[in-house]
Length: 256
Image 1 (cartoon, one colour):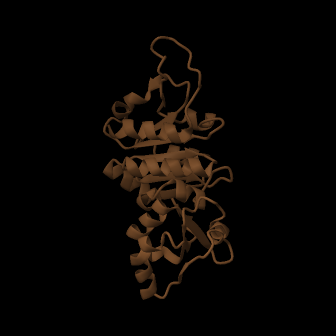
Image 2 (tube, rainbow, N blue to C red; image 1 turned 90 degrees about the vertical axis):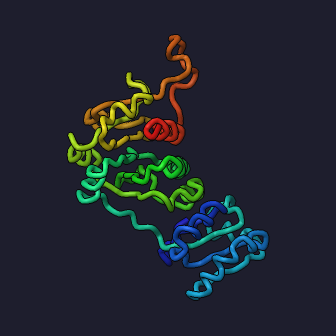
Image 3 (spheres, rainbow, N blue to C red; image 1 turned 180 degrees about the vertical axis):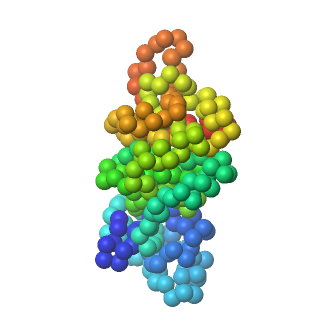
C-alpha cells in the first residue's frame, strides 16, 4: 500500500523485508514487527537506530494490516520511499546490446501478483532487466508485487517505456524481438537458437489477450509453450498458462 502523504510504500512479507535488509537496508525509513518476529530483525533495528530511523514492535498484528493494506504481512512491515521507475533510454539499451543482455518486456500485465511472480522468476534465473509500459492497465511496483516477488525486487531493474512499438522499432536488427503467443508455431525450446548470439527482448502479453497485434507484427519471432499432447495431436484441456508461469518456463529455456 502506498502512503501518498509521506510518499512511502509498504513492503511486507518476511522474505521481502529480509532481502531488503540484506541488499538495500538504507532504503528502509520505518520498521514495524510483531513480538514473534522481533528476534529475527535485531540487526536491522541496530542499523536503523544508528541513523535514528524509527522501529516499533506492535501489540496487535492488525496494526500491520493497517500499514500494509493486507492480511498477508507475515508479521513485518518496512516502509520505503515510493520507488521511482527509471525511464528506459538509449544509453541503457545500447549497454544491453553491447553486453548481449536480454530483457523482459511486459505488454500491459495488469495483475500485481503476476508482476511479483514474474520478478521472482526473473531474479531466480538471473534476468535483471524488466521493462513495463507507462500505461494505466500495467501493474507497477506495489505492496502486493513486492511481497509475491519474495525478495526478487532487490535483484532486478525495472524500467518504464512510453511506447512499446517505438522501443521495438529502435532495437530492430540489434536485439532479437521475441513475442509470446498461445498459437505460435515455434516452441519455446528453440529460444536459444533464435537469439543467434544476440540479446533478446522477450515480450509477455497481458492476462486476457496476450500481446497486442501491433506488437506481434513487429516481432522477429513468436514462441509458444507446447502442451503435453501437442505431439500426439490431442487437444489441451487448458488453452494457455498463467503469464507468470509462462515467464518461468521461458526464462528457464533462455538460460538453459
